[in-house]
Image (cartoon, rainbow, N blue to C red; front, side, top):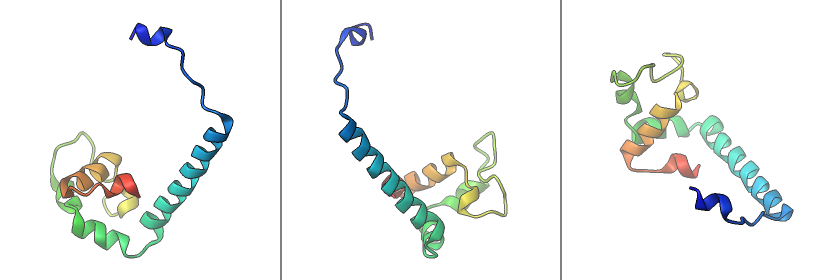
Length: 95
């Protein structure tokens, strides 16, 4: 840690930062479109992951969903990621 304080770091160029922002904006928009607008996504998620079963486990300090009657949008981050992890499909990282 101490050595890190004395290392000279290269500052990314403005063009690189702009390109990274464009990539971030496009990927975020595509992710949200897939999860929120594609009618095939929720049935796929429920079949590919143990999301429903995880909601019945008493393993956290809070419920798995913000709204018990809600859909995917009401899932908390940990059950969302845990459900994908249990399926061994890292789709949540790629969407």
